[in-house]
Image (cartoon, rainbow, N blue to C red; front, side, top):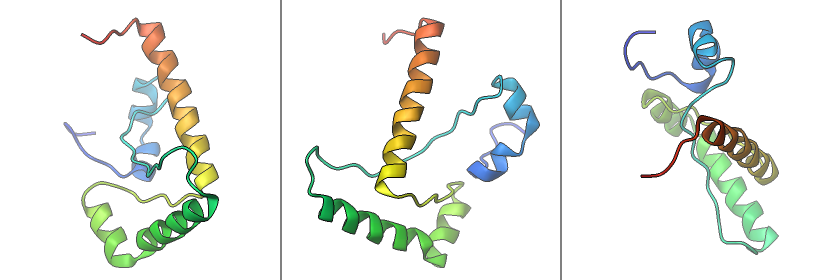
Length: 102
């Protein structure tokens, strides 16, 4: 990998040098859409459906890929599970490393 190369998630996963340097784990930037606690399920479902439709649009997908972002449409449940897993994983790394906010 040359310098600060930006790779879409799927391309980065294929790079053994990244996997080895991070001890088999991945560090990447991700975004998720969230709403307030107690949002009505029908609102969650509609927002999820509309956002996933946008991410499936070839023009939007191509633009995101050109910016180094890879759209990964998920259900609301998949997104919540992903966020929970990432929070648990990186919280452990932060605690183990003794990182503190200054």
